[in-house]
Every structure is written in C-alpha cells, then in structure tokens.
Amino acid sequence: MVKECYLCGSPNEDHLVFCRACGSTMESDESTMVQSSDLHPKVKEASEVLFRDLHFASCVLEAYKALESYVKEKSGRDDLSGRSLMSEVFSPKDPILALNALRNESDRDEQEGFMLLFMGAMVGVRNPRAHAIVKENDAYSTMEYLMLASMLAKRVDESRKLR
Image 1: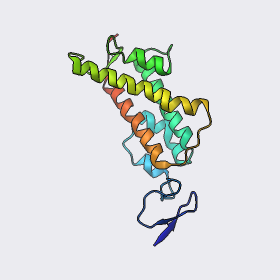
Image 2 (image 1 turned 90 degrees about the vertical axis):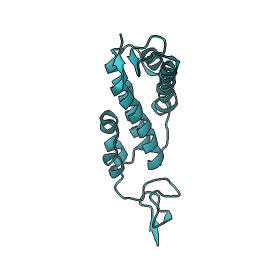
Image 3 (image 1 turned 120 degrees about the vertical axis):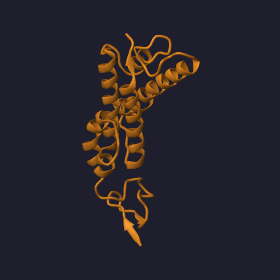
Image 4 (image 1 turned 180 degrees about the vertical axis):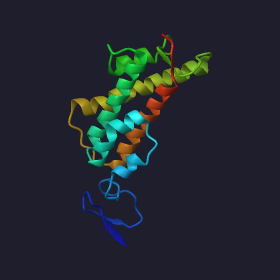
C-alpha cells in the first residue's frame, strides 16, 4: 500500500516512518516525536512548539541558544558566548565546569573532547542558523540535532562548578 506524505505529497510505502523525498515523519502530527522523546527539559521547552509547527531550522537554533544560556547560567559566565564561552567553561586545564574528577589523562581527554563538542555545537550548528537563512525540512535530522543538544545539556547537569 502507498501513503502520501502530508508535507511534500510524495508517495511512500506504507511501512515507512519518514518520507523518502523530504525526510518528514509520515505522521501528520510532528509534535509526537518531541513529546515522546527524552530530551533535556531546556531543549524540549525551547524546541517543541517550533518542531510541531515544522519550523525545523528555528527549532534547532532555539535549542542551541537554550544550551548556550544554560552553560552561561551554570558557569556564571554571561560575559562570553559561543565558542569562547565553551572554551573557557570546559577547558581541560582550568575548567569552570568539570565533567568528571579530572584525576588522570583519560579524565582530561574526556573534558577536552566535550569542550570541543560544545565548541563545535556553537560554531557548526548554532552559528549557521543564527547568521544565515538555513532551510531544513527533515524531521529526522532535526531530531538528531535536538538529541545532540540534549546530551550536551545533560552533561551540564552532571557537571560540577570548580570556580
């Protein structure tokens, strides 16, 4: 049996969850993806309505702005933003927020790796959507961006403030 995508009108096999042409969920209510997910509350709050209304690029932007605001709030560094905020807050040498005990090289490597992930999230995900028109019409890849933001926010939850 063939189902038509409610977003782009393309025909799709009945068993598919996402449209082959546009990537949109084959459900007519996009909000169920975010509602039923275990996204971090700050990410979910920032993105849920935009996702439901199919504003995917804005949804991702707002989620990453919420992540940045959360890092500022927990670290007390509201004077920095983007890459420089993440570099300062998660530095493996003298972090404001420690993601582990920082006892050995493995701990410091994890701290540095997550610092780079946080920096990359700002530079590679947030900035393009904040400074240019980005078209996104794929619910699945939007959820992947939201899951990354959520995972990073959960690491902020687990972090401890050192200074």
